[in-house]
Image (cartoon, rainbow, N blue to C red):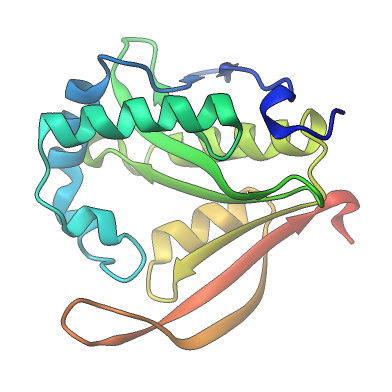
Length: 192
């Protein structure tokens, strides 16, 4: 692999049995906005982990997010994938961010649209992204940080083979001043 992150070969699309994962592009803002608004109550349950969900959603903000994500993808500073089902509905989003290409290691993030939760779609998307990171991007480590009380996110981490490495106590704070514990999950090359 080349040492310049922007020159690394990264696939714009990944496929699973039920999903197409692709990099956001200009014009996706309306789709993202619709999915975020539908899921806002669930996303806002974790204000310390998902501070962006506390902002007022708008099509313009979602469009800006999509364009900035596309630019970050080109620079290889963050790799966001929107997940679409066979009908073309946006059902989830997953990403590799906090990238350290020298190791290489990645932090994985994800959320699933409210109307498509409890169908294994987030797990399917994250499984594919973790597989891709290890097999094609040469990852040595992939980590995830979830609120200790976010059982659904913790279940996804465990389902994709990540292990709980520890709990950081009082590590984050909500906008109302409540301290939250954060779980560190990780998977490493070779399972060591």
